[in-house]
Length: 594
Figure: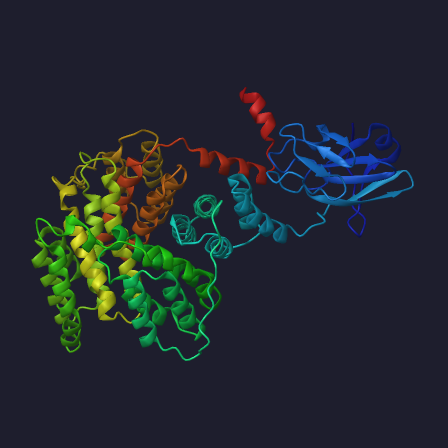
């Protein structure tokens, strides 16, 4: 087979790639003068040029079979059109094609791919999600990030696809939104893996599902927020999805802001107490976050309606016996709800002298009557909605950080639900005007923390600086050991010690955050693990340097270690995509390993 390396290109970028007579005789030649090997095929008086690496997994197309205008890769039998490089098999990608021309006895190639790479990979991202083929999605994400696309841009593309191709906002879109937030502040390879985790989850959730049917707004441009809010309460009480969706899209059509729409929707969601163990509120908040990530004007009408069926049909804790016996928590919280508006009015003229940490201690340790009384007293004393919601979120992360491993394994998620719910309430209150109805969510979250008290009997002891003194004080060594701890089961306490030591001795916590995310996203992580990862990191960024921030990262380390290792099939998929992006020859590595 002829190999050719051109000297200098001509002014138009054409390079001599092969001798025509030899190419005609041998049928194919390899040109290696560009940034990648190009295979030339000769058929019926024409020369065709393709990237020599099969886009599926990198096998040389020069070793394939050419017949009837197609080249067939011999590794996985993907078939490509010889002229355009387009594939007939959706698991593979189109192979880059190049222009050729014959001049006298020489074949020239212009080693610039014919198709626009960015446009192509955006299309493949859509196709990969539609096909629910992880390798296609991951290759698209890796390629697009390499071409300068941002995590936010790709999450927006994937989020719109997921919202419109599944009837209800589900765990996949929650995972996508969470990982988009996490990826935004991470170094390249870890960011790509986190984002790919989220996008593949959104694709998997939509696979085989009925698409969301968009409802039309009412033919009236004057729907005010107060009326929309009253209607939403009515529709949620009746579990009437059609009425709730049409009311929401009508409100959005008036140009309602995220704050206005959020106050109306979350007021209705909190009609039920801690609905669906917090998922109804949490998923709705993530829908708002995704709409904001896409861009409110475009994203809100396309994303938010999908959150309605998730929340309008939910079941509240008032429908659960656990919240009514042995203490009737429902009666207690309903009474406290009626006092919120008056407490806020009284607090307008006051300045709170307390702090979130002390209030969190009450939520963690006291009886339900005392918890509710403390929150109402804080509001009367001038505490803001955001301050009391921060305190409850802090109490939620305390439960996780001190989770006793003698509990059933599934109870990790019991504590997680309370934490992520409390975080969602906090973010929703920060977005809007914090009306009394939405503030009910703080009361619900506080009693959910109370309900989880048995998970800390006894509370797991967290490492003290003295107990960690024997560990290295070198950040890179601590991070390496933290990743190693995730390679064996049951390393919950070791992960906590290494994390605490890093926070106590290293000046910069950012590398630790990246390592903790890597611990999560290298695994075949469950939906709840991705939730935990985002919630803890956002809490750290909010409370960086404070004890509560440290607690959040220790909780994440313990949770991640408890849920590792897995088979890591997803990490293998990401590794293949990254190696193909670098131009590595996978089949030769496989042969050497064999």
